[in-house]
Image (spheres, rainbow, N blue to C red):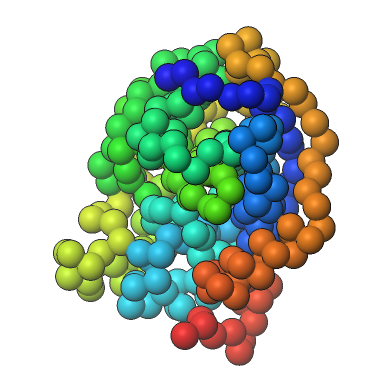
Length: 281
């Protein structure tokens, strides 16, 4: 799908995070806050979080969420309640996260999804033909799951801000037991105890999830995927690599907005594993 942009995309890679899992989301929010006019440059922001559970609002209803998060904290997972849609997604050093940010708050939800789906079809074409549509039984299943050979390798979620629109997605690059992690997480958190219409997801089947490396049989790395995304996407759209930069006051405002106004909690693995840790009420 064609979207009219007046400036090239700025391609920013902010690296790998291991401290607060809220930080990369704050940076996306701050980038969007800087898009105060239609002449602002759109941004493609790449990042990695090693390792954490990125919860959706629906997951907050799980009856034993605190116990599940404490258990995963002891295994080295942090957690964050994110502001975009969907349910829990596990992130690790083998997952590339990409945020597409547009200085446009009027674009329709479907148009934005379709545009980023086109970016992905081009960006990942070296690894096979992507299929879009819900992968039943996968974690955070939705209409804009994307898969290879019938197995989900990622999904997308949107967020609108005052000055810009953000579409966040994750791509499973190397092979890790992410589906098994989510089966165990939801079992510990009490998914099966909930009434059907209150469940954050209907069910979880870890075998529905895969990765680029696992499904292609090639030793693909995160750096490989980042490089191929840039090389192929810039063949079709104007893209200019740039160092990550955001104004400090926008970063501070974004942190306060997400943590205080939207009440998004975030904890490192060390914090979750502490004997006195409790889930915020």
